[in-house]
Amino acid sequence: MLCSALRRLRPSTCILASTRHLTHMGPVETTIRTKLAQALKPEHLEVMNESHMHAVPAGSESHFRVLVVSPQFEGLSLLQRHRLVNEALREELSTCVHALAIQAKTPQQWSSNPSLAKSPPCLGGSKHDNTMTEKLKAGRD
Amino acid sequence: MNSVIRSAARCLRASAWQYRPAQNNGELLSGRARLMCSSSAVLKTLEEIVKKDKVVVFMKGTPAQPMCGFSNAVVQILRMHGVDGYASYNVLDDQDIRQGIKTLSNWPTIPQVFFNGEFVGGCDILLQMHQSGDLVEELQKLGIRSALLDQEKESK
Image (cartoon, rainbow over all chains, first blue to last red):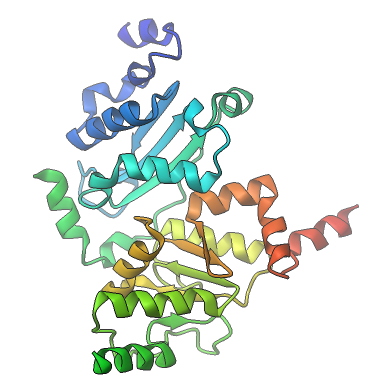
């Protein structure tokens, strides 16, 4: 009932839009949402914890996909847009977040093509990555 | 300091961590000397590496055996465009390189793609460039004709 009510809200209430994650939102996801909202004032924001798709323990917050729709991206190249997102999440990316997939669109681009990209299947790279233990620990601390 | 620079140069020549798709056995060249140098020497070496070839990819695994879905996506996109003569470096083999390239490009994740020494982006950006048609144009600027152009020609 809460989800259907929130779905009727305008897109500007972007943080609440992805309510399906609210009950399962970990601290890292919460921080990511907050920081992106503050830095980029998005009209639409999706933050997806994709750690379960990768070779990391259940409950990890190490792999994320974000979709940010913001007028601040007008006139910026893809690289410049992604750098803004990276900058907003600099601390997380230097500690617990191991992978961050980004879609950065202007409001016009989003309205003409409101589609979410999908991450490619994991090839188990984290299993062979000796820095993962530290990153996963950083996410838990 | 001289020994550090000599070591860096030795590693550059040895290409200890480099994979080239043209190699017969598809294996990484054996690591003769790990790059145990100061970070500035690593950065200098990386600056030379990214300019040595038109297309340079820092990835997890090798084009023959990617170890990460995002790195694999970059490999597949380049393959689709018929780009096969690119230089690829497996960051899982060398933490100095892995950290160094992130510092050089000021980009926190792998894979990383360079065109003519200039950082282009990671998997997401390359994918979007491919989908928008921009990748064909950028390859053309490098003097590389995308295989997709020939496919289009055949189908018309």
